[in-house]
Image (cartoon, rainbow, N blue to C red; front, side, top):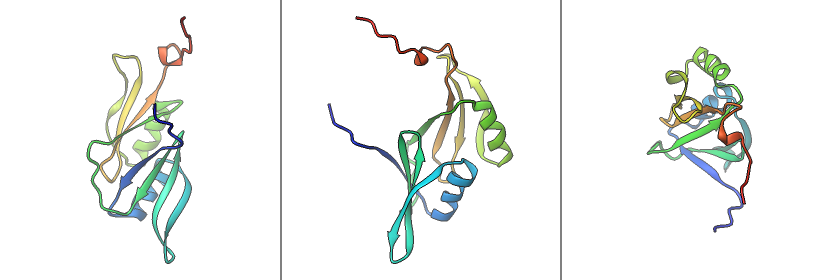
Length: 130
């Protein structure tokens, strides 16, 4: 298989400053690094678990990107983000496959799924059979 050394999800935006504000201030991600030229920031990489989300000032085309974010308590995040005015669909709910999910949308149109894995869900199991 491919030897992946690192990965990033690139999110193009028409308004880098507004996007950084939403992803950092509203959602709560932290800046890993900024880059640009001649003193002008043209991109920002954000810590997001084991992946970096990189916001680039190269237009907005969310295409079919969906960002899946596992959180400890999706209901707490939903309360916080609803108060912050984040665009969302319904309320967190347990899906037929057992995960608790809630869908939100970034200002660029990127769909994010906040996911809580219940303690008794198979994804929490690390059992291996021979």
